[in-house]
Length: 145
Image 1 (cartoon, rainbow, N blue to C red):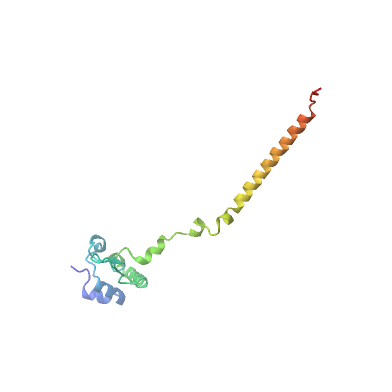
Image 2 (cartoon, rainbow, N blue to C red):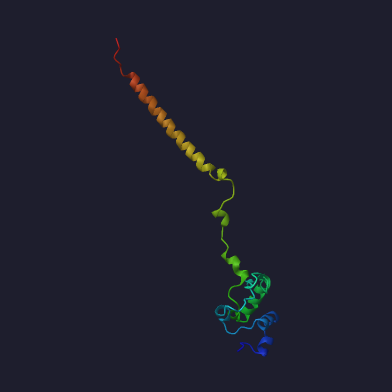
């Protein structure tokens, strides 16, 4: 049983009417409940030869159809998985997660800080050693004779 009558299809905008003529919805859940029904917004694979069939509508046309359907409150009759919505899952600030530059350039500050700390530690150790040597030399040693 079709959802639209001919009069209802004629009142819709041209692109939306053509879409519903070519792909009439059986019910609002027809795209998700019927696996044999080809989604015109997604690429599919032919089960016999494995070739990929491109989507019937391009991303731009999908967006236009969806916008018109939303204005007519018919967006629930369209397929839910539209390929033009994939950009919403894009990682935000990806450059901060994987910064550019060579490893030596990125770790330069850390390396210089470690080097400065090690140098200060070694200077403390040497000054401590010198002080101990001086104290030891000041203590009178018994003469071997």
